[in-house]
Image 1 (tube, one colour):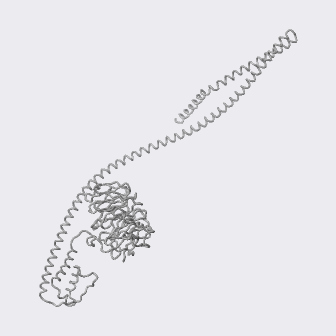
Image 2 (cartoon, helix red, strand yellow; image 1 turned 60 degrees about the vertical axis):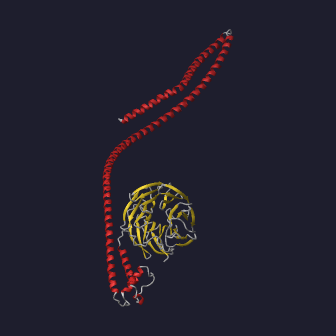
Image 3 (cartoon, one colour; image 1 turned 90 degrees about the vertical axis):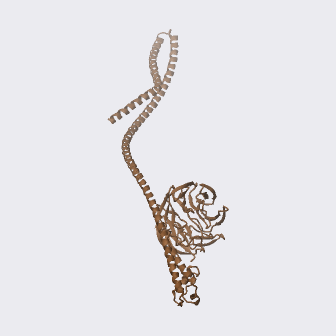
Length: 605
């Protein structure tokens, strides 16, 4: 049925085209046909007149021969006939000429007609081809409509499933919220119970210590009434030496002697009691309750002596892949490293070696920055999965996950109150977080990707991809000032009294900025030193007298701040560019990590 309709349609189309051509071209041929008809009429008239003139010519000739009277008439007639013949001949010539022109025109028109016929045949073939394509496209359209209907049905099914899952998710989220609230309440109650238990334990220890001290003093007072000779191997001498050492009366380098002396044997009772009391006092402090893993570490308020590294004490494989960051704990006992294997690894520094202590998991991408709180109880790590995370150091448990950035978080730091955190991201924003409420308090748009952050009490300093160091007032959420360097800022660090800022930039230069005068105080560079990445970290020594940074060639450079000159270069240990350097708060060790999987512990031992 469709083919019969198609045949009728193209035949009707050809007929309409022929009628249109007849109407358009008829006017052009109509004049030619009229001229041709007139030419035929004149040709017929010429033939008739020629025949008649021939007849008259013969008659005239015969009449001329018959009668001379008609001579004058014949001459005039002959002349008239000659003129008529000439005129007719000219007309005939003109008609032949027009006939030839008309014949040429007819030939040209026939050629045009043949060309048009060929074009009509070509158009018919193309029309047939187009009709076939139309039929094929109609079939494709039907198939696509069927597929569209199937997809709409599948989409509706998925939408219904999504709505159901959303309802389920909302219910689970509400359940999670309630569970979290219950968990928080239980944790609060548990912490209160632990605090009560710790107080009770400390009170019992104090009571027991006082009781033992009173008993010991009574026994010693009774024993002092009876004079006894002190032998060479008497334990009282050992206790006296130990007690003096605990009270700071004996040098650590002086060997303990068991040799008896009269001076020692005649020591007053009060000194002996004080020495023994010091021993029990030290035991009591060791038995006190504490939940912080850093309480047994030396105090980090300052370092007695900074040791400039000269030797690689321990070279070890830290991570499965690139190691991005390294940081010592406030007590210098623990070393934390973060790498592209999504882990933060903890190492205990013992006798110049790093022994694996544990790993903190929970990140979904590589670690970019590590920071400890001032007590060493919490560890903060920034990650490439747009989040920052906090672990407790006593049990290595993940406590908080701070999400909200739309780009990878390149740096995160504790503020000095340890209750707030500031983070900087590739999305060109800085966020201030409250750990009590676990929410973002403020978001500040910096205008450029933030590579590193350091903090003072009320000021946050951030280094950016646009070569600027920006100083932010936490209370006003605004830029106090900004300084532009000659390269992209990769690292920031503060000295021990937070009066000087150390910067590293991609122009291979380290600078110290005096925060009191807001001016560059010192510039460090060296032949061969090259900043290897946008996150290359450098560090101050604990006393601020040295700065250390790693180069793209794997060498560790140490500059003297007082002289401004390069102090030493340590190479031939790293096999790739150094990403981060950290100086222990005690001043004893320097740790460096590289783009490979290696970490190195340095010192002057």
